[in-house]
Amino acid sequence: PGQPPVNPDIQRWFETVDRDRSGQINWQELKSALINGQGENFSDQACKLMIGMFDTDKNGSIGVNEFQLLYNYINQWLAVFKNYDRDGSGSIEEQELGQAFHQMGFRFSPEFVKFLITKSDYKNHRQMSVDQFIVACVQIQRYTEAFRARDRELKGVITLAFEDFLNIA
Image (cartoon, rainbow, N blue to C red):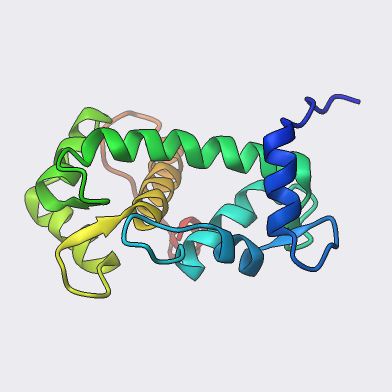
């Protein structure tokens, strides 16, 4: 009750990904199923983040209904990613990432965009894969929400106690 019906294609994919047939998918099983634009599996960080976002009972894994929500979420981010991956390379370069954030309403400096690329670019190619893009966007979204909740006067500046800062991070 209250759960939308599961798309049969998503149900089949869930069963394929659920390698131990537990009826649940953990981050390792998710990682084995997701490939980024470079032909590599999504990062541990991305898979743990996404499982954590949709793991409503906090048992470290997701069932088929949660998986359907995750599947739709990934596809939404994939569409955004493809929109900004204008050269079709399967990755976003600094300029493309800057344009993406600008169109999402963020006014980041070129230096900050370069920092984001460098932070997520383990191979030093100065580009970001789709899984790294999802992680960066989710983290920025979370930090933005936490910042706005504390910026009651809408000044664009907040004062935080150290523990409050650690709670955000």
